[in-house]
Length: 627
Image 1 (cartoon, helix red, strand yellow):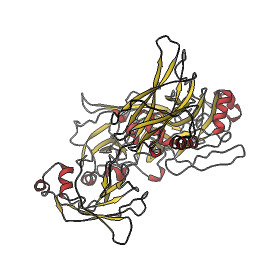
Image 2 (tube, one colour):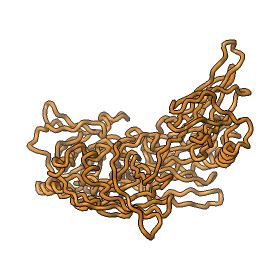
Image 3 (spheres, one colour):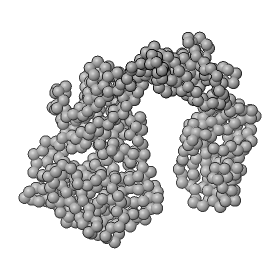
Image 4 (tube, helix red, strand yellow):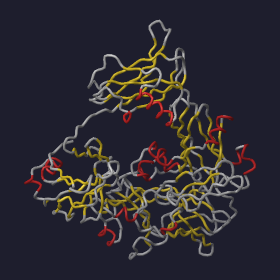
């Protein structure tokens, strides 16, 4: 963080309009880049430019898009434009914008980038004074007296450099926002009961602790206000925290939340729904627990949850629950409190797929707990056709050191003996491909359409999957029927006429990996199979290969080069994967609805596509499905 001196002008006739002279000029650039003006001049040029800031509404400060005066010349990025992405504020003569509240646009790339990533950008108008009255109050634990007769709660206060003291109140139970606001006002005007103020307070000390003897075990709330330089409470910096106090002989905060997934046919309470919601496309989820205040759930395919950071571009599972998790409504929470459990049915699931339920519980004492339930696999639909379904394996020894292995699965579709899904073909990443069986030709053909991405059409011959959170590397499935092929030919599997089992591959298949930072094909990912590769029926249920997303990229392969059409290799750049890949995508293409006892339905938002739930019981939002 650094500061530079600038000249600020106020508009003669328009209140709150300011102009900052050369706000992003050479003094700023040399500090920002840590280089001299001479060094920067090799890449950048600067034209004196002033920035206008609209503070006519002090709570909605804006910067309209305007040229910063900076031009990048070496890479053709051109002029750098600046604008506000979110409104800022003008408080006590200081203009600030929130984290990522500014944007910088590169005209040559026609792209915008977030700015102010640390939230430290500010402009101090003449006469402004920076003061720090921040305050945070947290429960730090319980302290028991030496004789073991009394216990006190320890509250830690962390405060800003200009705070002159702290006033606080402790109350039983957790307060609502409205109750907290009322108490803050009462502390500020001195009308609250039992106001405490710290003794021997040290200005600039940053942290201090206080002890309070409480009546006994239970939930409490501390509400605190800092005092300014005039010893007046600063309501805008109030801090409140609820906590569970166990008391003498008390135990730790209870949190007995648990979650499970069951077949509909195996869950007694769902007996009336077995015919409507079959086990191959539905599952019961059950949540149990006591003294719960809030429950959030997130339901998705196991392969996605196991690789959540890659699937979401860097989000943790907690991030995903925070962003996409759905909170149980009041009726559901009442049922849980009354009966000790809550259950419902997830519908429109993929047959033969593994799903995982994630539950985040906040109990009545303010403690959170995140649990990942045991994976659950949906059944395969009833099937009476002649094609033998199940797991198949194929391998190809490219050399003594390089053997490729793959276990894929042929899955039937409901009500058809000719339409199937082929799961995990070539790369075991959970993808399911549409496939058609032709008994006359003894073939099973994958057209290149994926379950959940039907609108994208044929995805063979395209880079469609990211290997890294920053999307700098990606891969796709390429299928070659001829030497002139571009990799988008249908994948044709031969069926043995006698056994009706998949027996061989008739196209060349590979999964090339591209590095988009250098614009090159760098190898293959777990998949290289040639025309004629033998395919055999597997008796086991466990895949012999590791998940594709965690396998290494093979860069030294025994053939001359990775077989990718020349025009694709020439067109690779840093934007290629974004153009060709849906990184966070849906797992199926149905519209999942939530229906109540009166058969009322609710349609989900188009993105992210969501998995539906049981038709009756409680009205609630569905869960997003990431792929």
